[in-house]
Length: 578
Image (cartoon, rainbow, N blue to C red; front, side, top):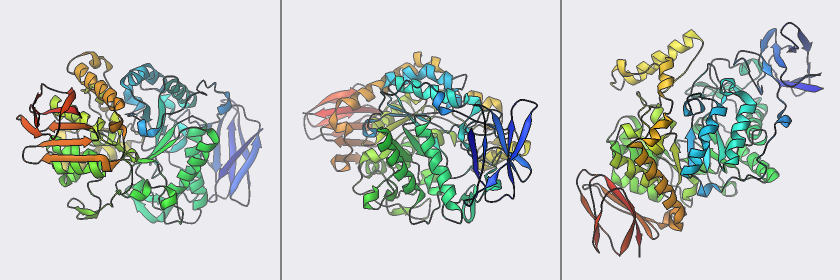
């Protein structure tokens, strides 16, 4: 006997509709208890299709574990105990020693499924990847999309393969020594197939986000709403053996409670970590530059383990490309790259011209291990009008400089799928909204967004065009052709180098020292006995050094003497001081 339960304080009546076959449908009245949960017992078999009939309307279960017919169809039961896991000896490595690889299931392989992703996992392990970070997979409308408009947060996308296929992928990752982090979206839900408001006060008009009314984390009824999201986080780890979660845009979690929802999540994940005896990690995305998010709870923080470091990305990208549009207006100097190396955030309580206000707060006392450093991620590529990767924007010389800076920084390094070989395929914004009006609105909105920046409208790919999605898929055959093979070799060498020296694995910002020349465009970053010397200019430069050294790795032929090193244009060298 299975107990079907749904929290639904809004409706006057709720019934369980069960389809025992294609022709036999039963509506079974449910009973409401004092906590606004409706319940009924029913002898259901695994995989049975069901819906909740809410005031006469059949709707999917808000906690549906599987949506085999998509966001508008019936839910299906899942018995998680029947899957045969083989990963019981697996333990994720400490996050301080991680190399994170962000990927999108639909664009990672030609087939775009959980099962097909398995075939390329060995390539990631061969590079030295320790954690893959999967972009959101919760059920979203259409066959393909980025996943940030998911609406059935407990159900793995059925076009990717559904629950068991996701488990097979995680199990295969663990068999190859790869931990798995899942990107989850708790700041909003997509507009199509989102029926939460029919059940209860999942949203509040007290707060608003760029997507409309905010998730109700602090108003009437918020206890069960918070429980909904916390239980979702625990499910991915307990039932799907995830090794961590990446929390999308936590700056849009508006919560005035005494215990912030981020702290509650951190506490419950920590409890589960103790229960399971596994290394788990919570990573936040935030543009607040607020150290409270990643400080320990014992000193007044929320207790999140790490967060993406956009300031490091923006400083690196702007200096290498010369771009100054949008938020890049705040960046572009060598000095800002140097500051990011020493302090993580460039804007840590100083004035931001782009925002026209003071932004951020110093990350005093925090380790570099609390930050992920990267040259590329899905946002910074896909939110460009043409989805260009760094390899399409800068020379190979500068690409090698950027990679060297990422892998010799005090942060946890992260790369985006295909970055390791300088993939030529773009990563565009793509959708397949089945609602014609919504699809048209998305397409028109994309045009208007970039037309305001002066882009030629004819060059802006339509997110709804299937070709936009197809163009974004990786071409794995490139890895064996030049210049991709040489770039891949460079990345492998950098990973080996990082793992070979204690100084490069040290997260202590106080042991990072920088020197630079803004006019000549060179930068020297020293971490203990290891230094990274970069020449970002288009002519050779001499960089003064204070002691003897050996060259560990260089992207070009280097001239040297006892007091300096001469780097060719757009080149980098990693040195060890004697």
